[in-house]
Image 1 (tube, rainbow, N blue to C red):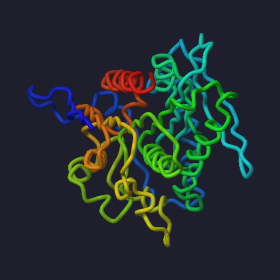
Image 2 (image 1 turned 135 degrees about the vertical axis):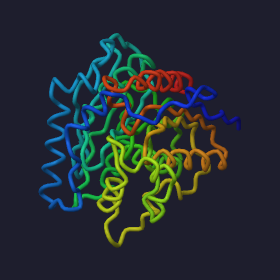
Image 3 (image 1 turned 180 degrees about the vertical axis):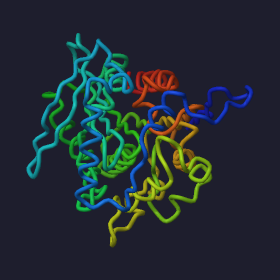
Length: 332
């Protein structure tokens, strides 16, 4: 298969200062990152709830971006035999035909909500002319490991696929996408889909975290950007602590160490100023070695979760355009 070369805006030009945009530095400079390891189980849950209330506020749109007017947004319930999962659904407002499907998973892990991704998902729905279903999965805490979020993402994908007519989607044109912790959910769902013989057209992984083993903190980017405003090395360490309880094999939740044969074309969106930037680079190389068509776009002066902060990080817009272009090509 043909592999695309890594694309990095500014390549060949004078080195860009490794510094976050002013808006990010001001916003995160006003708050101090909590000591996650010192939090009680109840405090961790309360922290996640408080952060999500902020994201759901009208004022937060100044940072998280205003949705595309060409897409409708609604909440729907996916009712499963053992639980109900809320999903946030984005559709082109003038759609009258069967559309491709993008199943999306937001980032955060122990915080986060589909609402924080309204900007990118509404633009994908309008620009690609697709139905985007964003999974409001269970958030991690000391009683809820990452495996629960993975099950939620996988079960939503299968449910919508089985009820394609009701959702107005074409089961032959489906892509999975995820950001940060959501990239891990998406990547593991792609692996399950391959094993189940289900066809996917593409996957999109934005600032992905793909290694929960003992090597997760050993990458150069993890040391070089250990204390960025958006994400710290210590926060990644805590994520591992909650995501993989004692007695769980971290390799089973680490796409980097999976059998990667037979996977769909993949787009990587990697912010340079990110502790987990090398996670994405390493996974891209492993996919290439397995024969997958891979495209990698890196963005200078962008840190972790930048795609959810277009009001503060200018690089979110070219990243959005690249995602829309890729999905148009893959989903037709």
